[in-house]
Image (tube, rainbow over all chains, first blue to last red):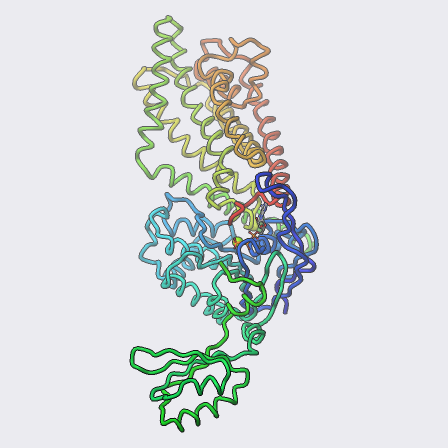
Length: 321
Length: 281
Ligand SMILES: Nc1ncnc2c1ncn2[C@@H]1O[C@H](COP(=O)(O)OP(=O)(O)OP(=O)(O)O)[C@@H](O)[C@H]1O
Ligand SMILES: [Mg+2]
């Protein structure tokens, strides 16, 4: 079942005069389909168009060309219907009123979603506990740290029980602890509600890899790849990066003769650490017998997995950040 | 038949939904604005100081005694004008900066009910201030009000509020479209409105022409009507209070309809141009 769909979606902006004027093409011909139950990631460098996509799907921005459907409704025409099904949380959000307490703020936003007060408060308390923020429920919002604030924002988004939630860089600038709580919450939430959908954008490769069922990599407003993390990584798995640590290897140059491109250096324990890229993994067997012949001892051999970072660099031609 | 009742249930749901939104948005104004006790000092004593200045000028001029009452009522009522200018008209600008505007915009309720919540909350908190100002004024300057027509008085007050806050909502959408420049309009409007709406003296003495133009500001007729009813013996009224009530009712309707129209227009335009959100968010 499709929950989000875009068809040849494009969006342009008039650039500011001080930026030289002209037209900025923020999204170009984006056609994607996101299914219920998916955590769908949008990964891209600064200015790629991630937030623009989310804003269009959240009814904050109209497309200049093409169509977008959320929960089956056209975001431009039936925006009220869309709004009943969604919520949105952005990283670094400073929403709310500083004079109110955490609980009061959340209650206030719940009232925009037609939730009876009592039910809203119960829901808020339950989520405050889940996000480890219950202790702070009666603190004024303006006294919260960045991490606490973002947890509050997450509760704001999830307390309305949306069918589809849009998270724009939800862990932006947070420490490891707060990020972990937020990521765990997202995966738990979709596990418990397999008919819901999460669309999240991120800068963090590891986050995309850990959370997402499928990832769209966008650059310059265009989707340049759309795959599961595993399949994306296959794009760069024609080479195999290996390291081998061994002791008692009298003639390390023989390793190079065998595999062609090995480099090595001695580590603190006097063992040699070899780095090599193998075009054919079967050569490992010959390597092992050669070391044994030399009366050396292999401590370990590891194959490094290609990361999404490798994929990204290959596709975009540069790293993130 | 069943279709009708489904329709009316749908209608009720929409009303309830928007009523909740209004209540939610009113809350921070009712609770938040009164949470720090320092408001008592700034929002009650400061107006009393400027009222006192005029009271002593009028005393020195040997003005009729009701003038002291006029100034107290005027001083209390201008609190609403400040609230409408700075906390209604300029408010959406703030809400956008903080990031609340986009959250209101994605919520399944009309922006009008969020604005109405601001208005109700703002009017409530300002009323606490206005009443304290009046009470302190009465105590210090020993003014006697007549309470001959409480119903008409209430009517005039209520429709002054609706018209005034309706105007505030209308300005709010214009301010959104004009951005920062609009701030200067608020600054420029503050003082002349004090003068035109008759904060210092009855508008009658501005002459019929000027007073008629000034009557477009709901505060003008509201103040004039309330003064007439509270000091019936003075005969300083511009036009009969019942007529003023009628005009205020019409102004209320006009401003509310215009506010609705402008808010819709502003929202659609902002969605086209990408102005509902801050660019870097
Ligand atoms: N309201 C706007 N007016 C003009 N240009 C805009 C507007 N919003 C976005 N843009 C431009 O559109 C492009 C895409 O912006 P967008 O915010 O979608 O990028 P992003 O992928 O979210 O980047 P980031 O990682 O920095 O958040 C950028 O070049 C940006 O400057
Ligand atoms: Mg962004």
